[in-house]
Image 1 (cartoon, rainbow, N blue to C red):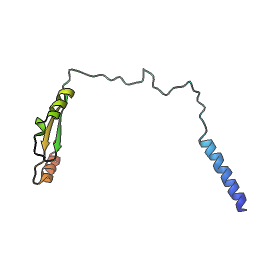
Image 2: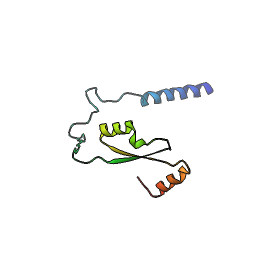
Image 3: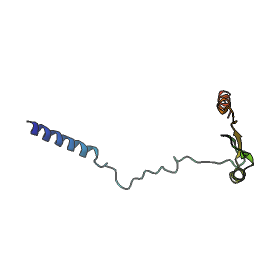
Image 4: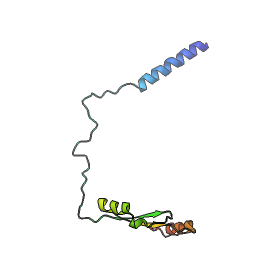
Length: 104
């Protein structure tokens, strides 16, 4: 009785897996690429000013705004980034104040 039950379960499982993993009825000539009329068109307004970004860093003994890398990135990308540092003492307090004031 157990052998018949196991045989029936394995046949049922095999049939279900073949049905689930079976191929679709679509032909190979169909493509999944969107047609040109439905694809979004990206337009870039070159006259629009770029936004300014702010970066909050941990304390270090240098001025990140005067770094060569920061100047290079500003020059090549055109985005102005203002770097700010947390203080040595109580950096969590300043971070909490910035978050509470919703500064960006």
